[in-house]
Length: 129
Image 1: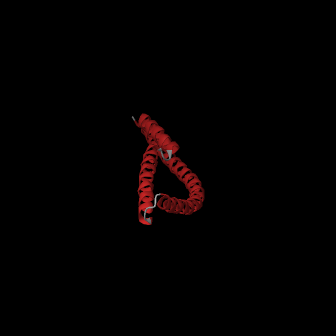
Image 2: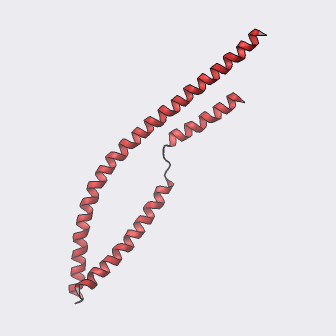
Image 3: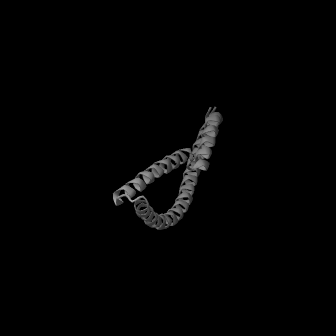
């Protein structure tokens, strides 16, 4: 009977040890994946910021030129040309923001970690049942 009790105790200890190792592995994977994603996002964000600044400056100059040209070509006051350009720009911004927002919603973040965690949970349930 003592052998049977020590065998169960050893099995429980081994199960706890395995579970601890599994959780530690999941945490390490999540940290590594988060660091990797943060590095990629940081580099991309820096390039995006510089590109966005240059693009915005160019767009401001282009829209100013269009507004002045529109007012001059149609013999309208300046405010009318700038108003038309502003309304068209707001419509374009709204469409672009909607498309961008919808694409962000479809993205799966930390997919490997989530999938690995789900597999680990199945393994733990099977082992403890």
